[in-house]
Length: 308
Image (cartoon, rainbow, N blue to C red; front, top):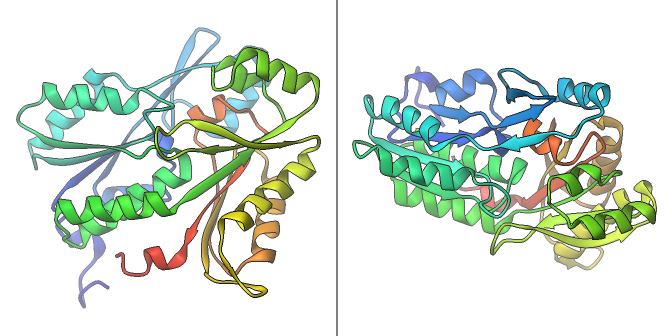
């Protein structure tokens, strides 16, 4: 709670937050500024032209370009030099910087951030590898930003992020595999076999190394959607016929809002949920999965109950 007559933007933030565009933070531009969160864009290259996420290219524009060009995209993380330039500029105001990034098991972004931290001795940079991506990573960024705004010390902020990260799960499915195959996220041979057999995988992100793991597979996209809800059911403890806990739930999609709504309906019909508004997947992550991808992040709601 804010003190009477205090505005969010008037409160001092004891640590500055840096993240990357793959974390899918649920903040508006005004909230990013108010919470002192700085988003470094990842890059998509298509047809010999490079686009900075959120600056040169928005999600729906990506899928139009993919369909028009018929080419497969290449993605890249920010360079150490880009991070270093930002750290150096931020350190002029406050040297304490918390830099939070998508999984090192799926991207070199956190490695770039760590290299940059060594290049800027005037800054005290703490780099956090979320070991996940998209919405689950965004939840950690949001927790850190709100806790910093509330005046929490760094150690307590990091503990809160760890708590949320450990409690949060995510599961995805998609209707086409060529983008995952092209990006090397699944093996070429396994991906081709799945494509020939018209298999729809269900994919999660494991917590030790932050890499993709296949949880199951179906022969239709409708069944794949139900399998995502089934996965949530298996992960949630039950007491009798009712779930033992309220879930915090957020659905994410690449460019497939109708399937995203179907998934949300499946999950909310089974559990008592605190629903975070459905959002679109970041451009760079969408380049690895294509238009059809949908997924859901979920965690026990009480994990967030004592957080700002």
